[in-house]
Length: 369
Image 1 (cartoon, rainbow, N blue to C red):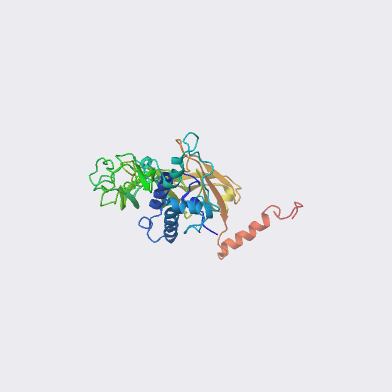
Image 2: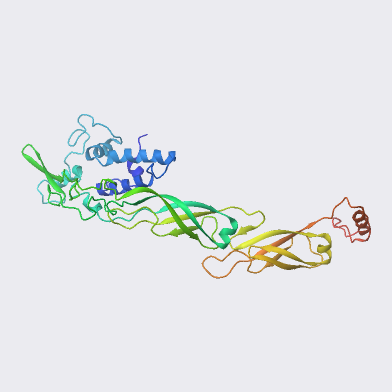
């Protein structure tokens, strides 16, 4: 099945050439191999984008593709006016109707300075960077440095894409209108200027360092502050550290996507922290005060007499920072009873004595021994 080139570029059928070029530039910069070293998926996507753009940016190829669903040379008689072609139906040659003779040739020639709408300042693309941090760093926050591959503003032209770094000069061929005429026998057809491609500016002033793209690939070492309380999937925004803008436009932002490494004994659910704490048989039976670790230091809790395994004790405000507001969640300490060592003779004797005087069998549903 033939590829849907419009879907590849993420544009609708019938969009203007300038929109196709904008979509291509955005995707090409995102999946460029220089910015995705070793990423075979990005490389394949980049080739697919180039293939789609090669067809949709060429009026003749695009027209053929729209008619037959594939790129390639037109079959005999399939051109405008031929069998199966669009012909001239629906066009008012008098110039008085909604469609004109000029509209017909604009359909195939781009026309009206197609590039002109896309030469102004453009904001750079945002970037995502996945970063793994430790469990306690996620709770308390951390200052660190990361290396990011991005498109930085070209230092040679100052991010304007022009050799001088200043304003572009108007195209001498069309006087800056982006329009030109083509002679075909005794007829003249209006369309995009063939010298400047419809931009209205002189094409001979591109910056050699960035080839007119306003930016160059760069590996930046960036210092970032991860705030307290982040969790898996949290995003930290670093303004202006995305890809550089085009033609003097502002840079995009960098978004750091957080992945938190698991802890050896703490568990987290939102702002709630939980931990399992061992207690002895005497502590469970007689009650005790025990020391419990928290992410903010050690604290003491009271174990009441007759405590069972699995009971949970709430420790207020010893959990993770609350998202978007002051304060912290709670920690829950779940206790479990650890039996005494079985190889101690004295303990074995005491356990036998305890067996004789202990209450009803807990497995006896009748309540008798």
